[in-house]
Amino acid sequence: MDSLKRRADDDVDGRTEKRVKKQWRVPRKNDRGAVNARAIQPGDSGIWATCNKGREGKCVGELYDLLAEYAELLYADQLAPDANDTVADDDADDGADIESNIRAEVDGIRKPSTIQLFTSVKVDVQCVVFFKTVAPVQPVALVQRICEDAQNQRALKRTRFVKRLSPMTLMGRASAEGLESVAKQVLAPHFHQQPFQSRRFAIRPTLRNHNTLSRDLVIKQVAGLVGPGHIVDLKNYELLIVVELYANICGVSVVNNTFEDLKRFNLAEIFDPTAKEAAEEGKKTLAQSDTDANQGTGTPAVMTTLPQAMEIS
Image (tube, rainbow, N blue to C red; front, top):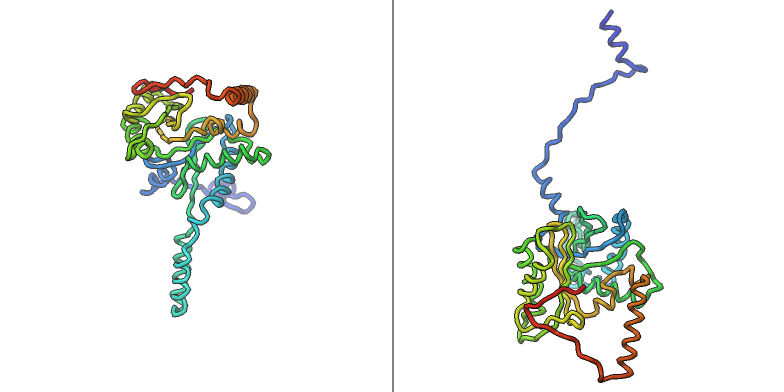
């Protein structure tokens, strides 16, 4: 009777309650690799973007749409299949049987021709998102084009949450050794070309959630890698070296002297300038008018030489 009673208690509406055995998931061999594939690795390139706190998800969504639009505009020809390959495939199909056609379709499904140019990577830094890029994307040229179009067509505002864009030509570890390795590769085409050409430059470091290297150490190290013969000019530079250190990741890129005119690649300031930015723009316009009126009487900018390298504020 007792056993029947216990069985009746377990039976509810004709259904027997089953005890679920807890299962422990054993990590697969490739799990760690799958996670790392979505992380920032040394040798990567990409674009940092800032936004207001709590708007990271919306910022990522906006950038996906914006970057996809520019990928179609700038890289469609480079990503299109070669016409010669298409003709060759057509000729081969004339003598191919059904089995080979099916095999070709299956291979096309397994290896899609579309390249994912932009991949959002989650970073443990508030108000910051990162998009990894692959060839043929050139982050500096892409961001500059986006900002130029925004400045020339301010009525066509396409972003609400994206603020500053920071293109990174190359990424590495945020250590003295990692910064040296990255900076050497990025600076070489701009400062170490032959025949030698002296360039006026400035350095602009940004550090977030990072306490291993200081701003002064970053500036001194990067300035030393620029090499002799170049001139530090904080106001009238030709090239600006942008260094970003976020947590344990560093990135370096070199931009031209349109950086300030493009609001330091800040889309929010381009579309809706703050009162401070508007006042600065007015002063710049007035100064330019005075220069045009008194051409030839201006005072030259003060320039210094290495190793007195300083950052641009």
